[in-house]
Length: 352
Image (cartoon, rainbow, N blue to C red; front, side):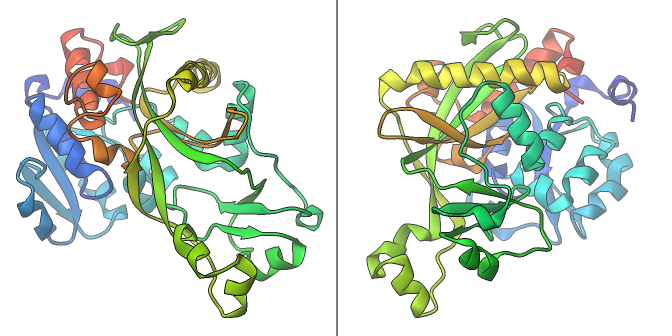
């Protein structure tokens, strides 16, 4: 896969920001339009009708395919349209991390990060190697003596995750056919911090190489765990056949107390620096999924190395992004980075 050669055949004055119509696509298309780019929405089947309701977030062109895997069969056509692929959670998860990694189209970001974020064991090597504090992992389910959360590998929007208090409860709930990790459940408040790393835009928190921006923060609304407490204790609910789940259904805008911001930037800095040592560096947006304990310490339980849906409440800016540029969204920030790279003739620094 020679991305450099493909880009040499592109008309750089007419690049098309391209992504799958799902997840954060409205924001990506809207941000690209603000920066003057043409946009292409890859859709599975017929173009989704609801895009007509949001003209500022509707792509200039829909590109229908049969399945996510079918995208690989349309590489030639998308190249002819000067497509630059923007990855997001649905795109990577439903196409498959390995197949997406091999998609022979210029893609924003470093695709090598997929190997490190989709495998929870490698993810832990990355995060702990960066010096971040993570929840304790239990390798033998028989050692479960306190509440744990069990998570399956990959970006699944919380689907299938569950809490167990002992080995017997774990065995009753686990799907052994999927790889999983068992983490000790950490009490605290959940904050999902949305960063943006740029190798050459000199506005932000300076690193040893490049700059870091904090664009927004959210927390997730999860069903049924966020409402289950209204009906009684977990034990009482299970007796009547209700099993709390962690499926994300929405995102809630958040800000954190200002005294926590230095710690947030320090975590982001460590993640970027370690990524450069491990696989050549993370590029663009990423999200640290954290818990803040009552002692005001961060514990990081996951990283998403691309735009996350939690940025969607901030299409017109956030309390943090507005202090960089009024009305700035993560979608627009991606488009700006591509635009700057073209101007500086450094597109290969951010496209793989």
